[in-house]
Amino acid sequence: MAEESPFFQELKASQPFFLMAGPNVIQSEAHVLKMCRQIKAVTDSLGIKLVFKSSFDKANRTSAASFRGPGMEEGLRILKRVKDTFNVPIITDIHEPWQAEAVAQVADIIQIPAFLCRQTDLLVAAAKTGRVIQIKKGQFCAPSVMRNSADKCRAAGNPNVLVCERGTMFGYSDLIVDPRNFVAMRDAGCPVTADVTHALQQPAGRPLEGGGVASGGLRDMIPAIARTAVACGVDGIFMEVHDDPTTSPVDGPTQWPLRHLRRLLVELLDIARATRGRQDFHLDLTPVGEDFDPQAVG
Image (tube, rainbow, N blue to C red; front, side, top):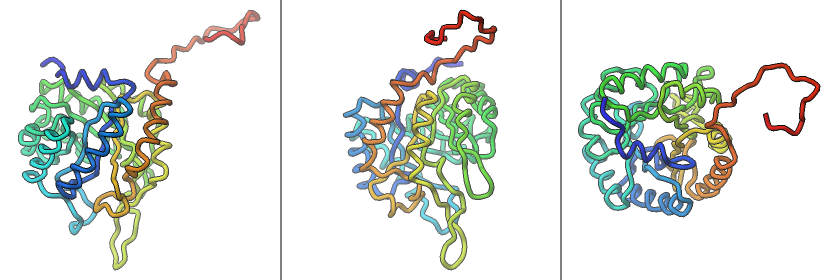
């Protein structure tokens, strides 16, 4: 197996966490340039490592009539301009194996969508590029599955793998985040990240006028999930951020407002500095005698 890439080592060394943030989808070149400039101004001021995120194609939209993005060729051109203009690494997702090589020419992290987290050919194609691979845990998967998905990438010769918790189906139109997963997914043998925005989706939970459904979400609960993830010691946070989320053509209900980004990140930094969430809590189960010291830190 190849050695870990310098960029992957940089992500692992990021303290107290790194941030993957940006609008869900590329709406226009001007918009993503604006978003990257403004998000980077916030993260630079706080000393947080930023990886800019946006998708060129949302291939798993609820409706075939929904906006999907500019497509791969134009989307990669735009992301390359963002990368060169602001000197930031890029994360974007792929849905089919043939996309991997082209996307790897621009993206520093190739993301595997949750619905596709077990697709061997997709994982292997992404891994063979040598880029960092972020695998989102399927909403239908146990956390233990992520070790198998990560192993598929490592077996293809790529040790640069992240696994991401993004919620678990709770009934037909809701997700729930089990904080135990932030710890259990460490069994995959790689850094664990938390998608604190998609985790608040309510899939196909919003009826549309004239029939059909769209996904809703619980934007106001994003801070609760983010606080929990950081307290549990995740290595990175994935957060979709928008300057006008109510007008976003994709996942508007679960994009965090840009105007509140700094306030939330400041709180998360405070939590990260206070928590010992990345340390194992070694339990002593021997009996306690009469000499018990209530002031002792066990």
